Length: 443
Image (cartoon, rainbow, N blue to C red; front, side):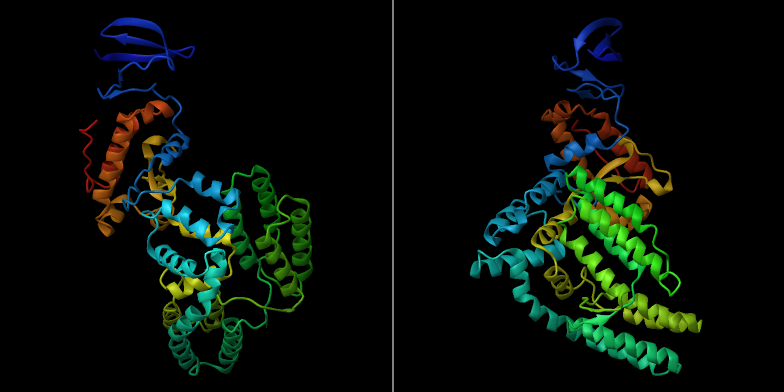
C-alpha cells in the first residue's frame, strides 16, 4: 500500500493511503512503513527541516566513507572529545591506543608519523608524543637541511646578477634564515598580516572545541585583530602597540588566558614591536613572501617567476616527512594528536560549491575528509572527477553505506529522510555532468 500524500498536523501524520485518510498516527511511536513520492520505502518520519547540515553531521558517527577517497571518515565530535579531556597529553602507550581505533583512516604523512611514534613508544612508552617527536627531530632536521641547501644556493646564484640593493636585502634575508634554521635569535619586524594568519590557525583549533566560552572569547579577540594597520611603519607603530595591548587585555580576562599558543603569539609580537631578538622557526611560506618583496620592485615578471619557482621547490610539510616532523616538534601533544587525526575527519561538502551558487541544503551536501574538502575548494565537480577518476567508485561506496544505514534503521533513529540518498545521487550526477553514475537499486 503506497502513500499518495503525507502532511503534518500538530506533530502527527495525516496519511492518505490510496485515497483513504488515516489520522493521528504518532511520528515517534509508530514505525510504519512509508513511501516517499519517488516510491522508495523508508522507516522514518519525513524530515521537513533539512536545510542545514545537522542531519548529515549526525551520520558522521556511523563510519561513512569519504565520497572522494573512500577512506572511512573520523567523526569530528570524537576528535574534539579527546581534545576536551586532554587525552593526547598522556603517555604515548595510551595515546597510541586511541590512534589504533582509526588505523584504517590515518593515511599519508600522518601514517608515517604514526609509525615513528609506534617505534619510539616501544623504547619509551611513558613519554608523551611530543617528547617522542623531539627525540627524532635532530635527525630529520639534518635531512631537511640537505634538501634545502642546494635550493638556497641556486637562489643565491640568481641574486648575484641583481642590483646591489636587492643583493643586500637578500643577504640579510639569508642571514636571518640561517639563524632560524639553527634555532638562533633574530630581529624581525612586526607584521600584522602574519599575526592575523597565525591567530587564525589558533582560532581554527579553538572554535572546533565544544567550549562555548572559549569560542566566544576567541571571536571577540578576532574582532580586535581587524584594527591593526596593514603596514607597520613609524606612523603606525603606536596603533599596532595599542591594538596588541587591547588584545592582551581581552586575552587575560578570558577563559583563554591559559592558552599557551595565544600567549606565545602575543609575547612574540610585543618583542617584535620592540625590536627585540627572538627565536623563530624557519617558515617556507614566510621565506617566499619575503623573497617576493625583495624582487617585486624590479618589475621583471620573468625574473620574479624564475626566483619564486626555484623557492617553491623548498620542501613543504605536506611533501616532506622531515619538514612535517620539524613542524610537529614545536607543537603541544594535543595539537599533534589533532593534526594526525584531523585530515580524515568528516566534513560537510557542498557538491555544487557554495562560491558558485551551491545551496545550503541537504540535497547539495556530501561527506568528505576535511583535507580533501579543502583541496577541492570551488573546483567544479566534473573537473575534479577528471583529475581524480577514483571519485566515481568512491561516491558509490558512500551511497552504498548510506543505503546500508537506512536499512539498519539509522535514518529512522536520526529522523532523516532517505530522499537524501536520491538527492545525493541526482546532484552528483548533474554536477559531474554524468561522469559519475550511481546505483541505488539496493534501496
